[in-house]
Image 1 (cartoon, one colour):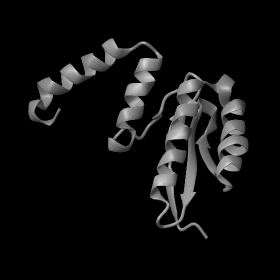
Image 2 (cartoon, rainbow, N blue to C red):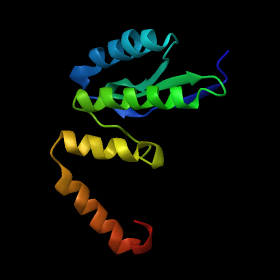
Image 3 (cartoon, rainbow, N blue to C red):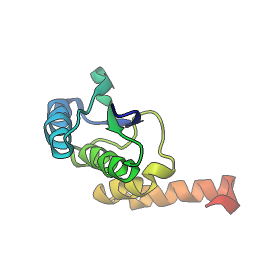
Length: 121
């Protein structure tokens, strides 16, 4: 049916799990007219919502992926619980740090990276 999926990796505070699931299943799923299956390590708030899409729907899938990450940010969680950031979430990490007034921490991480890998900033 869909053939492709992105597996998200968000974490929310345990007290926000029900709200996160409702926003994924009742919000994003309904908005885009497709299921959002969720795999999880639910005891620690780590969830892997799956963004299902067909070939040619990559832009739609990315919008959904970004919305899922923003749910985590809005609920006081993080855009990655265990799998890292990578290029797909780079702008979302900046958004997460802005939301929490942690630009100082982000700049510290950039400076550490410069020490280890100066040409690849």
